[in-house]
Structures are given as structure tokens and as C-alpha cells.
Image 1 (cartoon, rainbow, N blue to C red):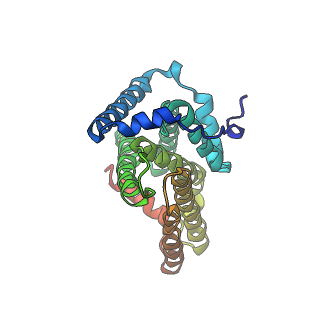
Image 2 (cartoon, one colour):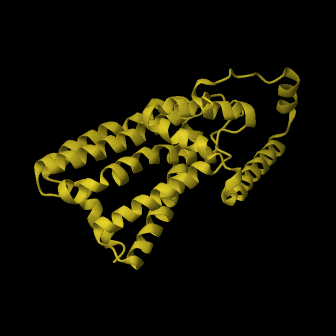
Image 3 (spheres, one colour):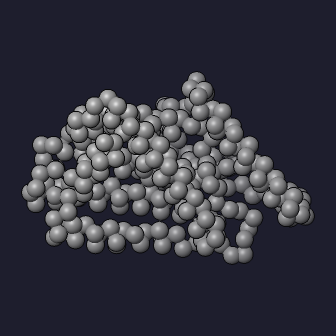
Length: 270
């Protein structure tokens, strides 16, 4: 199997003639080309969404594995894509398709744990995929796209900006380990242990939430810190402090996050 993680070619500077020609273009023309390029990339991605034979599922699975054990390797390959395909965002929807599979599989498990009937399960599945994953992902990606392009771009601007598609990819990358911890690993322990009104149950369940959210923040930080034209990306790590405070408060005040999640899931499908 090809070792993607070890291959990270150096950045190749543009030829001087190309740079001169680019600098001479009018801002309106450049903006028009950028919009057309982004639109073309988005249409290409959507067209490939149902062409499974064109997807590299082996590579997508490799990314999922390394997002858990060594997420830095995943972002080194994003830099390689920028050098070879002139875009930071994924052009292959295989990762999104595999993530949808894990969402469906874990939703079946949650339906069994919560005792949902078939119609409630379908509603639950649609909520998880369309709202919790895609809807929240669109919102988070849009917020980070606005914030990074407005406040974190190096000054003076070098003609580069953060792609919205890359922001969405960063969210999906960070969401996957969180999903594995809270929707897969935690699932068989919910009824027999985690949702009980005991301190040890609350401590174990809330610790899983702490690990999952901290991992989400860390992988998000890695995603934006890997972009060479952003500054002050360490600011993205600050929410970890708030999460630690909430964690200790939850233990002292008797909040069980996993129990609350189960109540919330049942409430919105009934």
C-alpha cells in the first residue's frame, strides 16, 4: 500500500513570468476567475458524489485511521494536494461517503439503545446526517471561513485566501474522531454504565466528552495552522480552557452529558 503520510514534496515557487502576469491582472478579472474556479471545483465535487467507482475509498480510510492516531500526516497530504491540484480542499467525496456510513451504522446502534421504532429511527437518522453533521458543518465552515479570511490572513495579503471547501473538510476531519468516541466507543456502555446516576458513571462519560471535544479543537487547529498564509492560529486552541472549566463544573454539579444527549435525541424524534 502506498505510504501517503511520508510523501510531502517541497513547495515549488511560481516562475517569475507567471507572477508578473498575475500581478498585472485587474482585481475584477482576478475575482471573476476565482469565483469561476471555486464554482467549477464545487460542481466537479458534487458530480463525483454518486460515482463510487471514481472514489478512492482506501485513501479515505487511511485518512480516517490517521486522524485518530497521527492527524498531522493527514494535513501534510492536504499540502501535497495544493501543490499537485492547486486546491487545499478535497476533490474526492470518498471521505464524506465513508463518514455517512459511520453515521448510519452508529445511528442504528443508538436507535436500539434508545428503543426507537422504525419511523422514529428514520427521523433520527435524518437529523443526525442532515443537521448534526452536514448542517452544523456548513455553519461551522462558514464561520471559520469568514473569521480566518478577515482576521488571520497574513498582512499584506499575498493573493491567497482560505477556501470554504477546505474549512468544511477541516470540520469533517475534526468531527470524525468525535463521532468515533461519542457514537461508537461510548454506545455499548451507555445503558449498563454511563447513564447511571453515579459519580463514576458521570466521570467516565464526561471524560469521554472532554477527550472528544478537545480532539475536535486540536484537529481544527492543525487544519488551519497548516496553511502557511495564516497567523495567530494558536488562538483556535483557547476554547480548550473553557472546555476544561465546563468539565470540572459538570462533575461538581452532577451534569451527565451522555445522559443529556440521550434525552435530547429522544425528545426531537417524538
